[in-house]
Image (cartoon, rainbow, N blue to C red; front, side, top):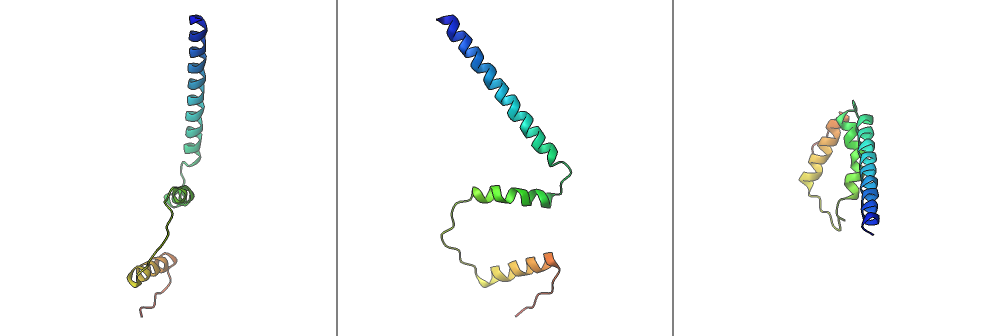
Length: 85
């Protein structure tokens, strides 16, 4: 009985080791695929994952100063003129 338990524990340890090595290989390949990619592209790739982990927003209030700042930032990014009211 003790030999069976030892053999089972060794088999589980080997399976866990193989699973860990496969996960590490997968992570290495994932990181290698992103090598040389710009930070903007990486941020765009991460956005859906980040959004999935955010809590639900029930109410959102935007004040005029936030809207103006946001529109200015978007216009700057698009290099468009912004009308100030």
